[in-house]
Image 1 (tube, rainbow, N blue to C red):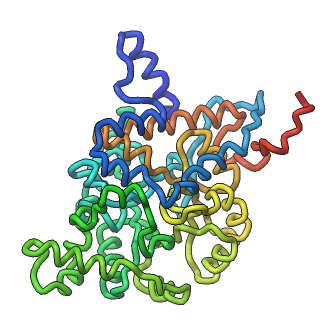
Image 2 (cartoon, one colour):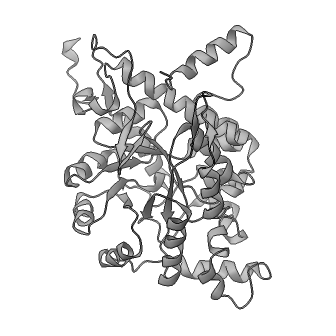
Length: 405
């Protein structure tokens, strides 16, 4: 059976022939390398967060509060990373987080990401703010292709992330287009109804959407186009102004979810849940799952670390599947999030840095590194699969009884 951990053996075997990896093997290394080749304003947009960026730092620090306590002699020859999620079996608990305006990083960026995701069987969550249309990305995901290890053929899984505009007819059109295109799940982002104070972007005077980057789903939408006096091809500035008017949506309420539920048969997940009362409200509203996230620290400076929110949200979820996003960088991070109750995790910035460095091969490299480390960490911690990961795997750094050593 092919394992994600076999990527490690591939690297060592290549080393025997005098070849070493072209790309860094850690998330931090990928970021440093990408920063050297990316346009500085684009790098700042991807890497930056809100205010002093304390929330982004807190997201990473939260993982260090937990330590893995391995067990041994437990029969872990063939660890199983597969998970059941919303009626689908996934080969691993990893998904790609939605990231807008990837076209600023590289032309045809979402299509390149889709190719890598499909090869690995990692679901791709496409942002509303994508630089290729959802139909184009869905077509790319649906193409059969051989997996990264050369075995079999695979079609990708696509989820669609919705930024809910003030124009309900447009929202309806976006959702229905996603369902017709073959996207399997709808992810509604709650925490970005307007953009936060982001000093890095402000210092550069740079917002990709103002330049028309990331607006492909709007510019191609018949409802959006009907709101314009002239086609966006003839007056992009007017289209950008319209987008800027309809994107902020501060008046959304829990009661609006009933309308959204009526527009689609797709499972609906809410992204941005950090409080247990919101988890209960989502259950009452008949939603299908939650994603614990603080938007990678990009929306509120001084917010609680997403990982610290996870156990309370899981406890209040009433059995709804809870996914985790914000701060995942290593296989050990994934293990800790799963042990704290997440059904699966979403990774964001690391795959963008791989994209910036090498397109589809760069995304594949970033994901294979993460999956190989996850595979090894699960087995080395004494578990035959991710299904058995639980709170007993972890100890709090500040409460671990050091006298035992």
